[in-house]
Length: 391
Ligand SMILES: *Cc1c(COP(=O)(O)O)cnc(C)c1O
Image (cartoon, rainbow, N blue to C red; front, top):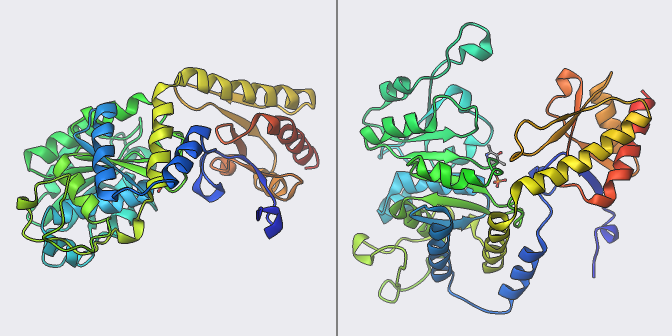
C-alpha cells in the first residue's frame, strides 16, 4: 500500500492545532471504523442525510441539521439556503443574485478570509460598525442598532462570526434580525470545545450555524455541520445533493414536495458532496465528542504541555501555560528572541515541527497539543530546545 514515504512526504509534528493546512485533528478510531463500515453498503444519500438530521436534532436541540464538506461549505450552503429558500428557480440562478435580495449584514470586525465562503453563494456583504477598541480611538464596538439601521429591501440575511468575545452578543443580533424577518447565519467553525456551545448557540435562536467536523470533534477533516431551521436546512441539502432523477420518482424526505414548484437541478453546492462514509464517520466522532468528559480531555492536553514546559525549563527555556477555562484548549506560550526565525527553523528541523504562529509578531511561539500524539512530546521538546538555543 502506497505510503506518505513512498511519495517522498515527510511526516511533521503538528504543534499548531487543528488547522486545515496541516491536516486538521487526529481522526478518532471510532470515526475510522464507522467510515469502513459505511463503505460496505449502499444507501440513498438524501434519506441518510434526513435520518442524520433527526439524530442531530436529538443531540443538539436544533430543528434539523446536515453533514457538509466542512464549515466553509456549510457557510456557502447556509447562505444559498437563505438566498433561494425553497424556490428551485432561485437555486438554479446562484451565484447570480442581481434579481433577488442578496445583501448579508456583517459587523466590520467579524470579517475574515472565511467570509469568502458566504460570498461564494452570490451574497454581498454589507459592513456595519466601527471597532474603536481595536483602532485605539474609543470604547465602542459594533452595536445591535447598527445592524438594524442597515436592513432594507435588499437585505437577505445577517452573517455573524461567533466567539466568546464577539460583540454585540449573538442574542442581540438574532433579536434584531427576527424583528425584521432576517435570518442569521453563524460561523462557529472553531467554537468547539466546549461541547456546550452546540446547544448554547442553537438556543440563541440563530437560524443556521456552521461547525467544523475536522477540528475538535475529531471527524474527517473535510466534514462539517450545518444546524438550524428545518426549511433552510432542507434548502441547503437540495443545493448540495446530486439531483439527477425523474421528478415523478423523487421523494424528498426533509420537506414536503408540495412546497416546491419543481424539482431543483444540481445546485451551487454540488461540488461540496459528502460521501456516506464521511457522513457516518463524522456522526461517530460527534457521538464520542458529546459523550466524553471534555474537561478531562483538556486536562490531558494541559498535562502534555506541562511535560514540554518541564523539559524546556531544564534547558533554561522559560514558557507559560495559558489555560483560562478548564473547558477550553490550553496553550503553551514560549517567548523567544526571534520568533519568526525559530518558527522557520522548527519547520526545517528533523523531525519537522509546525508550532503555533499566531503570536509571532509579539515574539511568542504557541504550542497547542490537540493534534499532538503522546510519543511526539519528547521529540517536540528537544526540537524546541535545539532551535531556541541555537538562536
Ligand atoms: C476553520 C474555520 C472555518 C472553516 O472550517 P472548515 O471546516 O475547515 O471548512 C471557517 N470559519 C472559521 C472562523 C474557522 O476557524
